[in-house]
Image 1 (cartoon, helix red, strand yellow):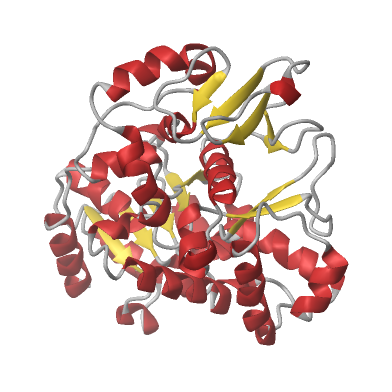
Image 2 (cartoon, rainbow, N blue to C red):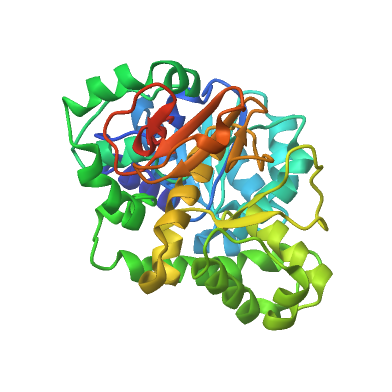
Length: 398
């Protein structure tokens, strides 16, 4: 136990505090049971270590544990927590919980038995976390850490540090907002780099090896995380990666499930089910027509990769600018918990209110002239007027 606490102390001591994710300010850290979910590589470990460092407490009071540590191959979490509490411990931050058998049950038992103990837990397999969190739903408050927004990328890169803006501010005051921001930096100068390698925080470690690490992340998710799906066939892993390549090489993808299932070699229902779980694993984002329900076996009307970095990693030579624009928009809106559906006219219907048409700077809103609350979202534009909004500004929503 002493070695585990020494590891915790060292990790907390050397954690850098200069940049903090916007989610950190939204979490109510006073709750007794907090779940942080998120795709691999989004910075969940850093978020927890930063919070522990803020507390400034000794490791016997507040400790970070990675449950894939060799210590837990022969020791239980419950036994450790009991000894920890006897030493005066109050805060346990648990990482990589999905690698520990029966983690949800043991966390539930600790929560119910020790009211003086606060537990914050996270794991890299978002599918397993979402599945198991259902058992803790009455107890745990769940938050999701997404990849970086364009605003956060700029802050981490040392370019610009400003507060996020709301969708309501963008739709009503975008000209004023953009005018203020372009006085502080050149938004189009950095957007291309963000679209290519700015979504996962580990870009800051080494931009040269970022594409390689991203390929490894994709393989880890498809080979490891998807096995938590009930009835998942490991032999399908290569077919799923093939499916991701098809998405990456396509213009905004409207799937013909019959043809696609034949091309990939998966049964139609299996393919639709895997598309659903790829959304959960944060490798894709599916778009459904307005007014339609969502179910595991319902064919999506459009499918995007979850973020533009994935498109560059999978098919760098065929990255389509139109697809990149729409992927960026879908990603930034969903990451700020807006509902996004496919309207009859336009590209996106947001919160059943705003109809968005996404395109280049010369894009007009002719087809939207009879649509209320409609906006043209234009790429390669610093400042917009009236209902024409620059694309990059939606990267400041979180």
